[in-house]
Image 1 (cartoon, one colour):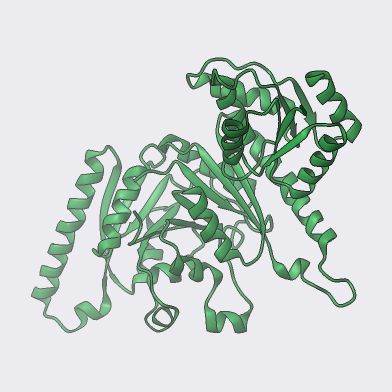
Image 2: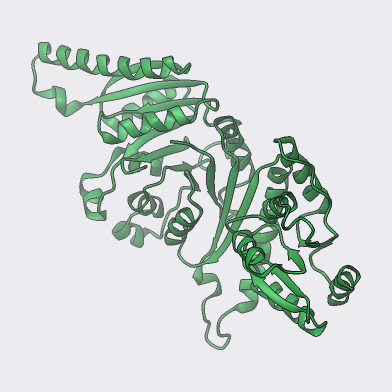
Length: 292
Length: 130
């Protein structure tokens, strides 16, 4: 795996230059190519009675996006990076998917996206929609909720949430590709409350030992690659424990795996990764099990 | 025979504007919507001059310019940059690319910042192509 080309999706209202600058840490991991995408919602230029299609409005919005992107791109060009831009009209999730495919990006960066309450009830957030449909890793920023600022290097202290599924292997491969950008990795596995509720103390200890052994194995792989890595085992509700671990280890980014699920499966059995992507104040990197 | 001018530009309005200027001044316009398509058109059409934007999908004008100037078959095709990106940034970017191991590339024949007046574009083309 490699991270040389990133797709930076911005509506200018929630993902700004500071987020882009914070990603420059990825240059140490070989990132040299940035694709900008701005999607103008159809609602903003759609047909109006008496006015027709708002062509002038479309031109104005495209011009504004172009000026913003040129300003951002100039700094990157001067550092010898390749920068391309797409300004499109339509629905955001399909546009992200198509541009990610056309450009062959290794990572999608986007802000958390909500929908109107009623629409969200039936269709989930746009973030979950994107996560359900993509096979590319997605980094979700939510920096407007708390301090309103992005840390200088969100890749500095990663928390890897591993559940020993196929996606856990993918997470590990992806983190290895981030070498150079990452300073510290805390590897966390959460044993669910239900898994220990009905077993004896002896069995709980066995479960603890086997999980610690697996955590140590992952840790050794990272340490051999010269990462500063530590294993941690937690027991409880996955989402709560991941958040707790992040706070204890001063995490700057959560890295989680996810499987593609249908909207209904997601709704009823829900994944901790999607839920944290929607709720966490930290940037969340989701690595799909299907990533190549 | 009319000289062929390739315009590499992703904005449809600007493509229309440049096409009009080219046709009114007796040139044959060829269009490409990004740097990747631009390179294909250069190989296929061998234009007499290229008008090149910078920030586009798939491949930027900065990369395309660098590739053309390092290719012995195309390095002599005159290039007019037409972009919202400043000339200073363009020159610094070419210098930065050179730092990564390539040869130094020459400056473009002309650098026009958007928006450009039709007379200025026509005048620039006339100076270069005669």
